[in-house]
Length: 207
Ligand code: PRP
Ligand code: URA
Image 1 (cartoon, rainbow, N blue to C red):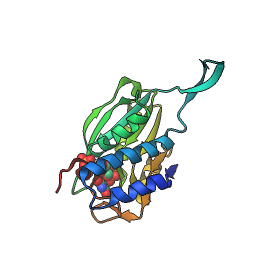
Image 2 (cartoon, helix red, strand yellow):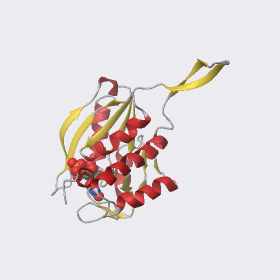
Image 3 (cartoon, protein in one colour):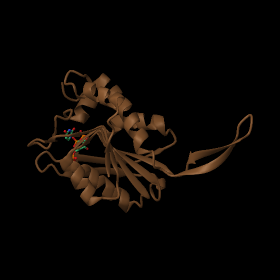
Image 4 (spheres, rainbow, N blue to C red):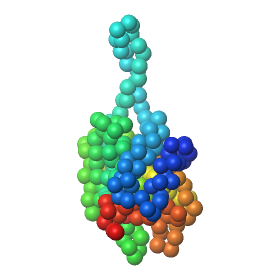
């Protein structure tokens, strides 16, 4: 299952973050803002429980989140989405997966992995702005399943059909939420039109 968040507020911000003239400060701010909107949708099915709350007038039947939440940014670019999701769910725990795409093979190489104990049985939200070939996302889901994650949700900013298909074939139980499903991958496995190298644009490592 995947869902593209086709809301004008998201699409407006996406138009600005894609722009080659957008510098790293603005890029980071937009990544945070877009993440908040997309995660808001992505979290709509998480488990809740009914609670009674005493208002000044009476008992109100309310709902509270009833699962451990673990946000998992894929290093490095996933860190650019962390602030946005933590504004929504400030008590979530954070696990990290360090992955980079080998420039020649385009395959993900894992260099770091650290998950909180609540990963086991918890709801894990994988964040990475770019789901391109899908290799990095699949590798992260594999690690989380090995760690006993109860439920996994993927949130990205831009993806493409090819990457979605690969992740959905490998992990049909994992829903993916994105601000955009772009046309294709180029010969370097970059998303086109995409927004370029998300890590470099977030952290100002090029230019
Ligand atoms: C980018 C991006 C994803 C991955 C997507 O990271 O942030 O993690 O590539 O590609 P895939 O879907 O084909 O696996 P990159 O390897 O550039 O590392 P970085 O975050 O350290 O810049
Ligand atoms: N990584 C990026 O940062 N951008 C892409 O388009 C593909 C992988």
